[in-house]
Image 1 (cartoon, rainbow over the protein chains, first blue to last red):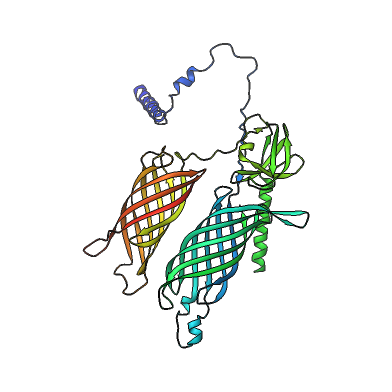
Image 2: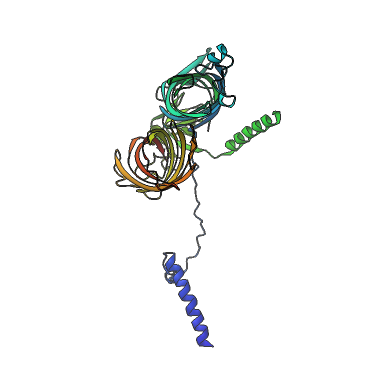
Length: 223
Length: 243
């Protein structure tokens, strides 16, 4: 009985030893050795170390919002455009921005002159694009409204590339833009943008680069 | 629609309330003074100055600037380097986070331009560093050609040979992925979806603060059910932000 009991204890001790070994810590025998041997102190100090957690400073480098405006699709008239935009501000000068927009083309001048001709099908008139841009704040400053109010602002330029889906086809498009960001408050901004989407197409006969210029007004939130 | 608007407004206010309850850091000005600018940029004028031993509350940051509130309620923007010289009320240095170290950064997000098999390529990637020299990369790309469009998603491992070289450090990678072909001109492709594998050689470098560049050349093997596999090539260049 005694042998069995001791073997059980031995197994338990071995197992716990293995456990300590696995955790990479010292075996508990050393903890026992650290117990005070001398006279016990009169007052046992019962001080818990206070864990002081310093709160983090929130970074508000992201900008998210929407925009609305007019897009001039070359050969297809000027039409309303709307979309969403998101930006990340890397430094006070540089930012990375993404756009996702949609519009609908009107009747081309060719279709106006010859009503029997259809250049683009009805579903193909949808003009959808996305852009990935790099932006640079060229002229940061303040805009004054009367005597008592000043708004922070910046004139920026953007360059990038993306995809334009028009006439049921995806085309690689380059994108050049210029805009003005006006901060109504520190977290709410108004944007006035002019952007050109350039891509190659052969829709109206010969292959050529088409310029599709849009002017938009947007609102974004910094968070 | 009106309900949705009300809900959105409520959400916005809700967020505002949570922010109001948030604990903010208070720092003591240790230098002779701390300048507060009217905006988060080098050109904005100094509108208020806080003296030594006065306490300012740090509200939030935008790029290299920190919005702070002076003891009497005035708010303005303090430069990172100025705020780093302040102290906590306990006497410890202010916890102004330093820039992530380029050699040991963990996360990376980027986008760029490339050429895939003579087609224009738009690429975007996310990257997680398992160690300083070994990364897992997830890449989403769209190749825009005259005959078809390809959407390629790939997942792979990349080794950076000498991560401590800041301006130029060569890399090599290996991975697998999937491509979807959306044809523009008939006839339809025999297979619209294929699995693929790739090897890559490239380089990366530091630009400024948390900004970097990356260039990559890839050789793919696209597995087809025909007798021959496709072996397209690709090169690309992009800019990324690291955290």
